[in-house]
Image 1 (cartoon, rainbow over the protein chains, first blue to last red):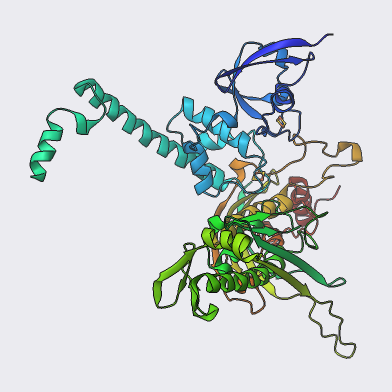
Image 2: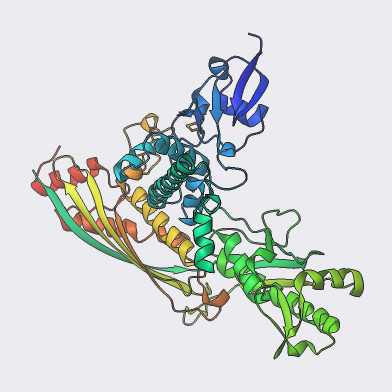
Length: 192
Length: 336
Ligand code: FES
Ligand code: FES
């Protein structure tokens, strides 16, 4: 069968490429789009190193025939950092020494992103269950589980801060509290 | 039918490096125009953290921040010679070579700074943040970026250094058998607590206590990583991993990750790890190797814990439920 044009929204960018029928999504990401974060550990769905988010859900991209998801939106590790800054999961992995050779890391982080998107406050057991399809040969898993729990805590804190900001914005018409009428005056009065 | 609890203990002495035809590693360091020190190696970092540790060694010796070090590894065609990443030798051999190279580069760095500041090189010191300054007169100083530029464009100098570490081949003394095959040995001990289900033969590791004497922990967080990752590997060898745990025919052997068993995130025990530091005289800042040994002691410790729990003495890995049950049958006087 002939190759066909496939359209994907990858990390918020629309991408178009040719793929022969049955080409795994993983191969398209790596070979056609040059996104090398997702790894090909087994190519048969048993190691999780190729995990990406497909319309928000974690999938093993080695098992997805790319033409069957034409039009879908895909998120890979390359799309996780925000404007060059590591997100909470990435920072927690880095600071928690949750990576050694790094081969499992992209899959672990994407699995964690999906978990935290649907469950912001997971238990240890829920984290363990979420990564049960991801093999790590180096760390012994402990530091990875710890990092994901840490990331959840960081994200909840960030979310709370963002909610506070929204609250203030709704009440005062601006999120910059120093610029809100009254508060700046009060601060100036205190200073004088 | 019961779950039987047992505790087992094992310890290991582990050599750093090897004794074939001699065990060399070499390193070259040079400064770029902007004062980044490139450490060239053909050594390989497989994930054990060699790059980080040698960057620490270089930064410490040069007296510069870590950000000024760039470690370029793993090109065996063009890099200085390294025997390889094995025998727990990386930190010790490569670390020593890098310290030697960095010391030579530091001398050049201070010599050029002496010319720039018009003082004696012996009166200079590094402040650890990127400045080379006159001892006791810290306002007379030059930043490494300016210094590297001056070295290139004013003085025509290369701020560089060579490091050659060789552990010579050592033959035994025929009369006594005495020899020095390795540079130093690290020591460790594991206590494992297991539960054996005497109906299913399944062994569960509940706790692992690991104590390591490794000279000096150059990077304590990475040492902890190796200890914990190694303990997991040891447990995996002890209870799960084998290319042929099944029989009677090879065809039943595992072919992929779905059939090759390893403990997952749900199977890990509680770890308690302790690091003891007794610096080795010949190690980089006293460090010995810790890589391979971390998977060693857990295995006999688990075997001993199984024996303690149920009286079955297993000496073939992995200690599968079937082997445990056969051992129990024998103790109970059953025979096929
Ligand atoms: S490469 Fe996809 S699960 Fe292993
Ligand atoms: S860090 Fe090496 S496989 Fe997980």
